[in-house]
Length: 94
Image (cartoon, rainbow, N blue to C red; front, side, top):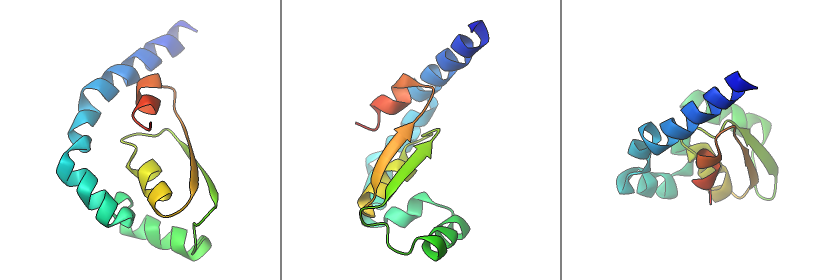
């Protein structure tokens, strides 16, 4: 349990510092204008091949990272659940 707490604390700290650079007005505007920009082009092509229409689909994003995939899936019409060990990362999804 002690190691798990250390990992959680590290991710919380990373959320407060390193991921902040991904939340610029410019990056958010680009994401809103073109949600697929959150994904590598190969990843997005695979998603489109498997699920061409995300409208109303339920998507779970484990390890939310910079949250861009979470926002992108939402903007593309999916109902998204974000799961992460870091409570701070999840706070950024609200």
